Length: 384
Ligand SMILES: *Cc1c(COP(=O)(O)O)cnc(C)c1O
Image (tube, rainbow, N blue to C red; front, top):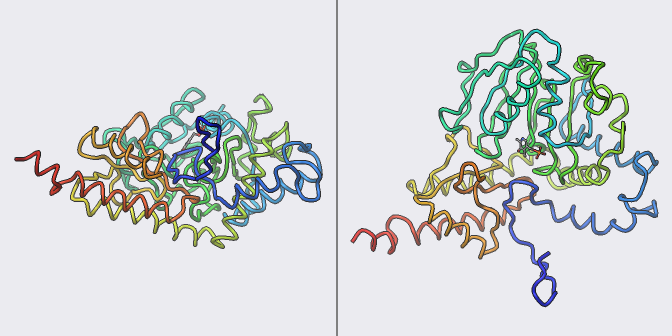
């Protein structure tokens, strides 16, 4: 809500392309507002009740069940609700799965977040970089042949969607008996994923699944045995699993919102398969515009690695990129600037970004190109 100088509130919602915290479904926001003062049948708000109360027992169980049924999480895996964001997982993963082991952990580095995860893991144990896309500016993923994975590795880590560069794995590589560990922060709940192949999957919630404050960790139960006894309790997956994610006060509100998002996906799309079709169609609108632009919009990601969540591209000059972001904002399309480390434009089009928002952005892109691109009066003027 924006308050103007007279103190009046303007409640018009814009199309928000923020990479995270990011757009939430309107229905979820309305439900939060509706139940904010008093959860039906409880007599208090979700912000005011004990995390060990029967009412919160239900919220926790429903959120976990929502995740289990959408993702098809098998009984072999536990679902944990932790804090500290995906960044804390960069350290907790090697603390729990690598500490004290002979064999290194393999890291497939496909962008900024994967590089960050590998860096933190190296503080904790032996890390082998199985592939690093740095030399190609993280514009593509490795082929199966390019990954130098060890069959004895303690685990293989990858990032299913690199939020900053906009490259996304379309299918997970085979890792045999080596546990696959996946940072799914920015495409969590956006498409189906074969959980039976996952050793550990983690995601902060504020991109696709809710609000900042909760990080979901889905871990194969046998891997919990690796957690060293000497670990501080709050850093141990085994402790969190034993205590049902309530070793201490969990982020109750963020868990509640995550549960609402799961229900919204179920009610609106029916399944992650259906949602993935919807997301791919949204992304295709923008990629088709890039492809039709004759290079005016230069996509960052190689075509076969394009992300359905974060669409990244450049314009011919920095000045045009600035004008693009400014003029888009004037039309109610906000937060389109790329990450400060890479520049350019990034449109984050998570689950909750409506099709209408993507269509409006596509139409804006077409109009902007015709006004400023090759063949426009401005470009023709520049040549004469
Ligand atoms: C946003 C993001 C992170 C960082 O999440 P925090 O909750 O801020 O720690 C890590 N990995 C990926 C892929 C992300 O998109």
